[in-house]
Length: 392
Image 1 (spheres, rainbow, N blue to C red):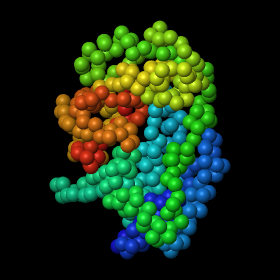
Image 2: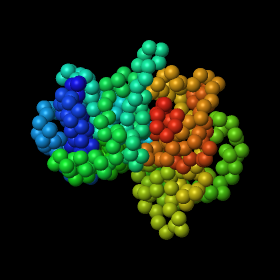
Image 3: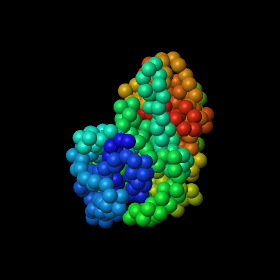
Image 4: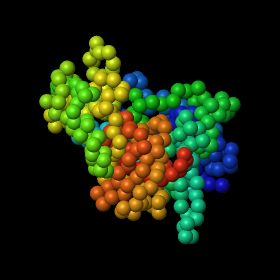
């Protein structure tokens, strides 16, 4: 049996993960991370982490396991929050939860766990791990969770072989109702506690207010682009990889001003809420942002052509292959199932590896492709092969 440090978050999933490991005979240690101190923009009270810490400690007492707390707020601010600010400032849409797993839970936290003498670290993620031997070396695979409604493999898409080596996902074979049932049967304090929402370790936030810690509000114009915009036909006529992946480029001359906003960097492609413009037959959606001119472009209706693109591009430096042996060679193409956001159903696509980066061409045009988000590719319904930050 192994010595396992469990990241007790104060939620039901990590609580049941700890119970399962103890039932299996492992030496289990609970470790709570405090990663954020500032409450600017939070919507869950003044100090949400206090409640999380209390529930985590109650679970540790119930399970009769050692309990520790580690403050990783410096690392979290430098590696996750500053990255968020920089991405939004440049007009991109980051995914802090993916970075949190790569940089904090399975790096900074892993190091703390190893300092406690751990053989492995465990979390309450709904995903699984497998291993096999290739040329005498152990290779680890990241698999989707058994509960398709809760699968969190998307958020772990940037993990490395070294990180997976130490990772355990005890609840990966369970469904959420089964996890709740175990927690109730074992009388764990978190049994009926609601799942956390919002930014990892920060919670639910009013994003513009949160971002205004670093990014100043600035009045700008909202321009509406009609679905009959002539240039859409020109974009669709270009069937080259670069052409299919090229984002639509609008100017203020392409549409009519219909309102104002407080900063283009507060908005993302596909967003509907927060515009404050009513009286339309159909909802308005963000179809383009320009942080240089501080302009946002909108289109009316969920089927507006500006919401959909056929392909995306990932730069060479932004590709990550969980299993390096799976990496495509220049000129190679391969079919994958891809998602560009959490909970999106897997989409059929073809990947093209080129000198300048990788292009993913979808069988069906995709809604709301946003630079800065992660595209994750699977070789079937279960195994994550790789991921990358969408550059265009």
